[in-house]
Image (cartoon, rainbow, N blue to C red; front, top):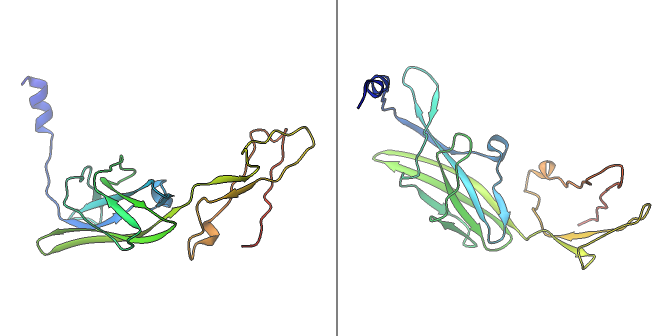
Length: 188
């Protein structure tokens, strides 16, 4: 070890702090979704924090994938896949993967126990049918200037109970000078 290494090691501070409740990082805070197509994994970002005794600051764990987390899936149509991993986002230190086998929702909970300390959080995940073009059957449309055509889609993400305001439909065109796009909504 040379002089530079010794100098650098002298500046490392190791502090052991108590954990505070773990939490999921939800889409609005972490830029990810808690829903996916049937058969595709839903990666739920899990964050674990430590609490400084002298302040109210919470410090996120950098890595925690080795923690013995107990994952419970409440709907039998969803499976926890402990082999699947994704790169954690935001302050998350690990992820858990849940796969939906049918259209629907399920509550999941993640728990960590150490002695008398229990850290737990829960969330709702959802799975949906893939978004597909029903009409035209070829799924291709090429239009002449001034022409129009109705497209019919099936599947895709569904509205969440109690959060229908957040559910939106985004339709766009590559060039507004060439085409106008507008939805025709049919009553459910």
